[in-house]
Image 1: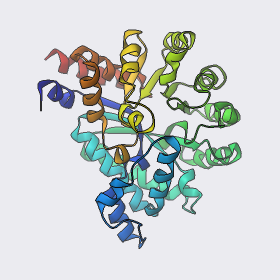
Image 2: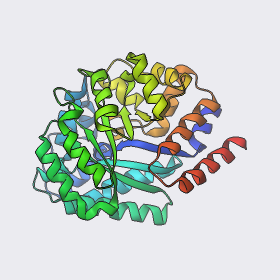
Image 3: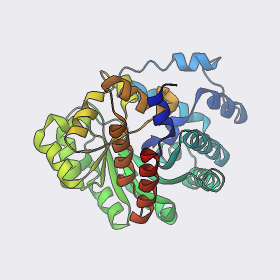
Image 4: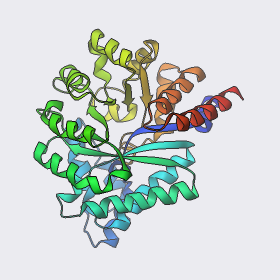
Length: 336
């Protein structure tokens, strides 16, 4: 490990864009399939990994959703979540906000209660044993109906104390933010924070980003690389202090390259850009590895890396006192 890699490893970190279902490693797929008597179409772990030949967002999503078939019971969701949190803790991630996709499970006949109770137990166990703090973001699947999203929002309300905010993910084509305007307005009224995916190089990317900030009034933007295509848009995002959760390694799977150059431009423009892992079980890179990839590609300095970590802690949906505690630990680390 080089000195800069050691610096990245030891640096206190925060992750704001990771899908729990996307942390499902091939080994766990086999374990859960055996536990739940599910026959997989693959003979070995290597066969599963060989199937991850994604060329764009839809080809990834096909594999992503089919992989969820092994998640059936509360214990499955517990094991999935705790495995990620152990890995995150080993990378010195102090705090993370975790996406989950309840519609991908309720549409298979699994109750919302089963999903969230398994996740919640793992969060509590990890905080008590490992010291890693987390919050949940419930994502709606944008290629399903707004009515289904609203029904899911209403179903979440008894568990509102366990969910910090709502997001929007899945296939963006012909599914603009405005399709879910009423759903997000209701979520805001219920006290949820708001974020939305604006994936890289999608149809009408810039138009969708403007809808996110002007019509939906999001608190954060997931991905958002194409904001740089419109100088007025990137300036407005910077003016509002909206964080962007960029996922370099996953970008390289579904588009051309990691978009690390966009991260450099965002840093230079003073935008609140952050680096995250997205779906590390499928893309083979957790947060630390994403930071290493970007550092090598564009030569990030230690000060740049600190700024990326600072941006993430500052953008977290936490009380200011909690943010200040994490930031003081980051400052102490870099000063030492």
